[in-house]
Amino acid sequence: MTAIVNVSLKAGVLDSQGKAVHHALDSLNFSGVEDVRIGKQIVLKLAETDKEKAMAEVTKMCEEILANTVIEDYKIELI
Image (cartoon, rainbow, N blue to C red; front, side, top):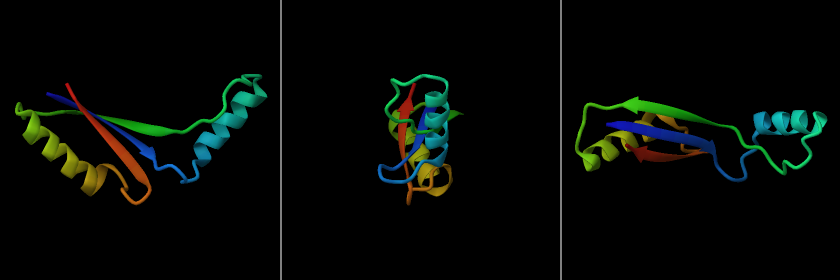
């Protein structure tokens, strides 16, 4: 089973990388972009085959090391 974890800054947290990319896009005349937020994606190959157990395990990983839950949100997709 594969777990895909998308981590992004919580709403209201300043995204300096996103602002820099937005500014660069504006300077390259991509004026239709209203906002940019930068995140990260983590792909985990799991031995677990039970979806509930896998979700619990990956959630624990996110809470303990993969995401800084003070300033970041995460979303898990199992495939």
